[in-house]
Image (cartoon, rainbow, N blue to C red; front, side, top):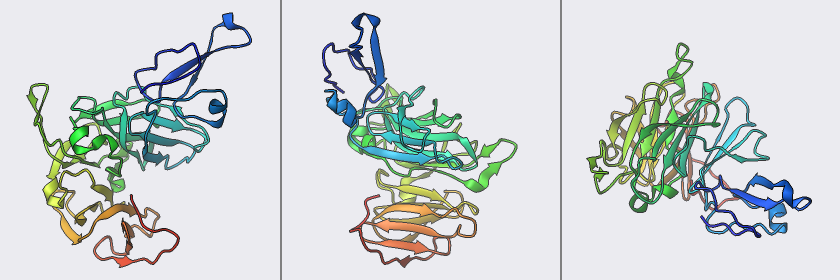
Length: 318
């Protein structure tokens, strides 16, 4: 990222969107510098002649809201890391401590423990050890990498592959642990090469990963071919809040697993862009999926669907 600011010019920080821009304190130049976080322009910064060059951030990739207090909002970008708001989205600040990757691909709060958040990340334009799964235990204030997966952003498009790729099984909550234990991650393809840094990748190819300890450790539970995931760069995932059924949508259809992701049944054929679950008590069997031209609803946990008539929008992208 390149930044253009009034003289004097300081080198940008190594992490985009966490860059700090310095401008002199005009009232007393000798007093020092006035520092402020500046990746996204505002009307005030533009009026003051501050223009970010380069990318800054190209696109929003993921948003997650605290399930208890909606004032905490996390917002991930493709090349600029993570932003965090504690006032309902009125103001955002970079929140990248411990986050070694720059691209945020997916976010999910633990529905039973708001302190725990999982983040799927990509580290850049080539294979690197910074991609994978990060865990926060303080609502996104700091992060720890829990699982490394060398994604190839150039081939698989993972850097710009924001989607619903992490899903907690709400019914797996364990009071002894204080959080949900089962989490799924539908990861895109490593494709080729199958080696990184001279070592063979442990699990090349798109796949469904599963954690049984809330995201601390991960293991591959199903290859992408079981749910026709191709290179898996377009698969979305959701989990039934009580029964634990696993749902995956992608360009080849809608799939349901009744055995924790070990096997899948194809329910519908089509190019489905999104899959959402209603978690309100009494509505757990309501599953919504969308294609570019259709919105469909299931009232039986994803076994059958009915098209929903809608107006005011031409179609759906995600």
